[in-house]
Amino acid sequence: MTISGNYFAGVDVGSLAAKSVILKDGEIFATGLVQ
Amino acid sequence: MSGVNSVESGLNALNLALETAGLKKEDLTYIVGTGYGRVSAPYANKAVTEITCHAKGTNYLHPTVRTIIDMGGQDCKAIRIDPDGAVVDFAMNDKCAAGTGRFLEVMAGVFKVKLEDLGSIALSATDTVPMSSTCTVFAESETISLVARGEKPENILNGIHHSIANRIAGLFSRVGIESDVFFSGGVAKNSGMKTAIEQALKVSIVKPEIDPQLIGALGAAVIARNFAKKEGLWA
Image (cartoon, rainbow over all chains, first blue to last red; front, side, top):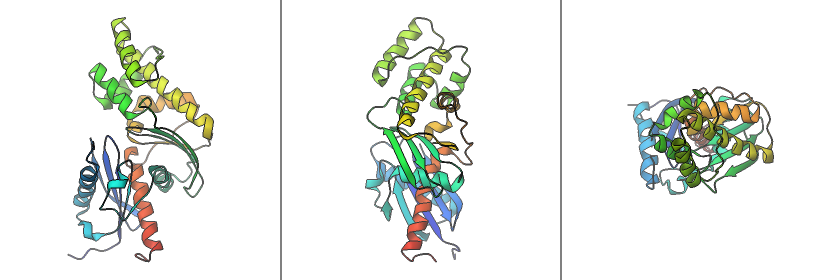
């Protein structure tokens, strides 16, 4: 499968939770939250 | 809880987002890690401080914000930013657990209630029981004494929230406040804390467009995009 767009991720590891956000070009595309 | 294994917990959060997006890690052009576990994030291209990331993440969603209160699990920060989301000044409390998510977690344990219910319980108070202790350990024993004295849990919790808000106001005496004001971090989901801070700082807090706990990760993603552009990986 061909993936269109450019994807950028941020991962924030805190003491009580880990969080992630993926941007597709400039828009929020997906998030992940692990408590 | 991310605990001591920050590599694994960070990867779990990233994999969850990838799964939601229908992507593989190889599809990502750039990854930035932040938070206390950023130094042990081998999957990231770069690590950036959470202060910078909260500033960028807030600016991405709410460009009119100039002041950020960030309350996480283990520290609390007062951050001033410019119209581009660059940090102008900041102050932080990372020397003790008082005024952090960990403090509220301990209090939830004392009252045997869920952490996410603390704020709404505090907002149902009919009175504010003053909390004199600022240390988590002393505050825990003071709370137990107040319960034994017959004080209502909601009034004690209201006092605890106001005690934390007053500590935060102390941070802002060092960096100042400029509207608009935003509240980020996991504790920002606590409605009682939001109300107590609004009263202590005499401000109205901007309503978040996404889960405020994700602001640091969002800022890291925005910075990842900027790095990719700067390094010629994205036109």
